[in-house]
Image 1: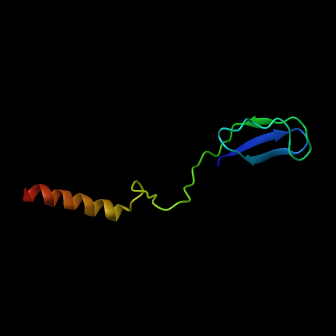
Image 2: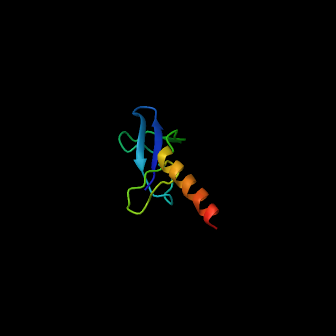
Image 3: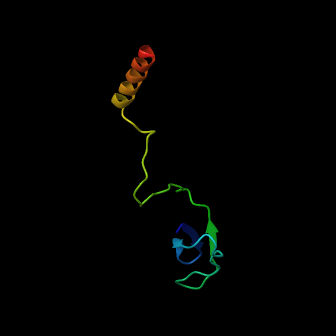
Length: 77
């Protein structure tokens, strides 16, 4: 579930975990004051399940070996 940031005049900024389909909070869960949802600067996505991988961040050594293999494959053809 995504985390949303809210600003309360008494409590300050806090995060609230909510479903995407839920309506934004109108009152602070701590003090009951009116809150406003703010746009978060932290937009990183964290995958916590198996099966995700990254190929864009390979080492330079790996990239060099891949390039050599491609050159060898085209010469053999």
